[in-house]
Image 1 (spheres, helix red, strand yellow):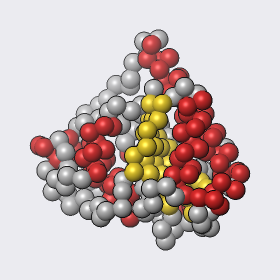
Image 2: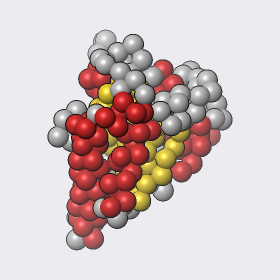
Image 3: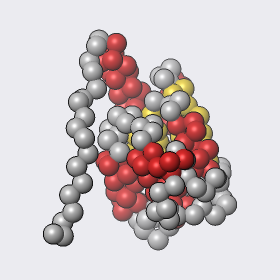
Image 4: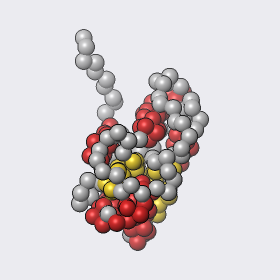
Length: 210
C-alpha cells in the first residue's frame, strides 16, 4: 500500500511540506509507503475545456499535471496539501486539480475511483476551513472516500518552525495518517474477502434549463 503526498505550495520545504512530512512519518510506522509530489513553482495553466484529453488520454498542456496522471494509478491513497491564499487554496493547486480530475473524467482513466483522499491546509492564521471545504469538493465528485481526523486537517504557522510548535495541528496530521492506514487495510481486507466494488450505472447528464 502506498500514499502520494501532494504539496501544492510554491515552497517545496515550507509549512505545507512540514505537515505532509508528519503524515509520512506515521504512515511509515503503520507499514504504509508514501512518496512526495511537489507541483512546483512554475505557472500552471487552468483548464481551457478543449476536451483534447478525451482522445489523447492526457492534458494538452504537458506539464506536472500529466506527470502526476502518469503515476497516479500506482498509489492507493492521496493527501493533497495547500497553503491558504486569500482564504482559499492556492491558485496553483486549484488549476492543477481542475485539470487532473477533468482529464481523468473525460479520458475515462479511473485512476482515483474509490481511492481514499484527504486535504490538509496550512495557514498563518485564517482561511483554513474555506480552503479545506474547497479541496474536499474535488474528492466528492471523484467518488473518493474522504479521510478525516480528530479536527479539521490544518496546521498554523508563518514558517516551518512555527508549524512544529503547533502541537495540536501536528497531532491532527498523525491521527489523519493512522486513519488513512486503517482505511487502506480495511479496503484491502474487503477485496481479499471477495467484496466487489459497487455496480455503476451509465452516467446521465441532466440540464436544469429546459
